[in-house]
Length: 158
Ligand code: FES
Image 1 (cartoon, rainbow, N blue to C red):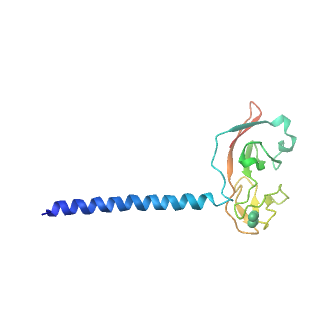
Image 2: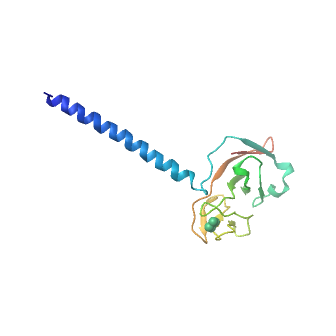
Image 3: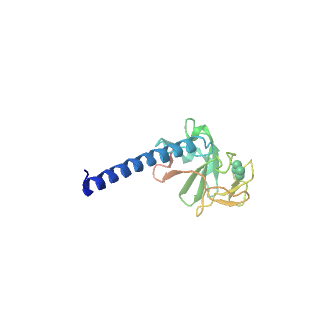
């Protein structure tokens, strides 16, 4: 005959197994859901790309930008690098998080616009990559962008 303590232990053991099983099922559904979402940005790879500012005249002045593919990074999709403020640069993907459209080069008004449903994304220092008009969409993926004034380089970490 089981004691009350043994019954309690068996109950807790069974509850623990169910909890673990539930976690596995939840994780499985998350993985399945994430892998089918084609608009999800990829995780960071840690790959660093250096730009020499002297070789990038389009980035020389505040407000300047480039839209470029850095082969092997960002799923080979362009990124938009912007000279957002004095000695500050920021980089965002061109992949729209709403439905996979392509964010175009900045078109005035401190924003870039998606070619699919015309979501508008800021290129301003204070709210860079945030959705600021048009179709509502999530903030775009950004990449760490560091400026070394002495070396004259911009380093983007993908
Ligand atoms: S895909 Fe960019 S706004 Fe819809």
